[in-house]
Structure formats: structure tokens, C-alpha cells
Amino acid sequence: MNKHTPGPWETGEDYQVQTEDKHGYEIAEIRADVPEYIANATLIAAAPDLLAALESLLDKADYEWSGEWPETRNDARAAIARAKG
Image (tube, rainbow, N blue to C red; front, side, top):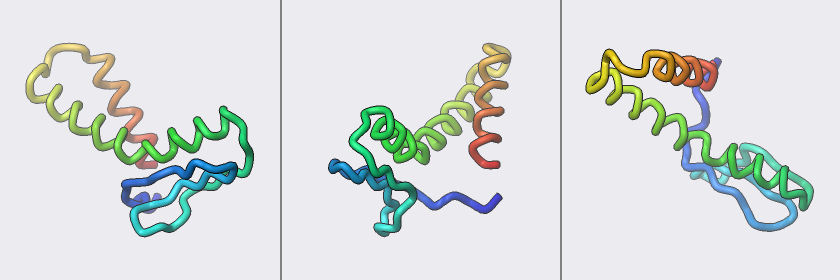
């Protein structure tokens, strides 16, 4: 998988919600005024920040709490792997 388009990504506020990167290139487009679709666009826009935060938290957890929460840390690693393809 190729590296994802770097964030930040943003969503618009009209009926045609667009998720764009920092250069204004469209990542996703939602063409309906449906709360679920707008929520999906918002989640997509947050994805780069969520991935970075999870990676940072996992780094700290591996360093600070190496013997604690192994299942949770494994879940975090699996989510990061899915996000990176």
C-alpha cells in the first residue's frame, strides 16, 4: 500500500461534504445531507490525527508500561497495521 495523503484533512459544512488534505485535494466527498454520511466524513478527516495519536500512545505504553495491558497494546498494533495496509 502507498503512504496515505498526509493530514491535516478537513470537512466542509454544506450538503456536499468534502474531505480535503492541507493542499486542498479532495480525499472523499459525501453528496447528501445525511447525519451518518457527515459523521463518516468527519471520521475520515480525523483519521491521520487518530493514527498519529495511537502510534504515539503505543510508543509510550511500550516504554512506560511494557508488561501491562498486553491485549490492548496488541489491539492497537493491529489497528495501526490495518490503517497502514
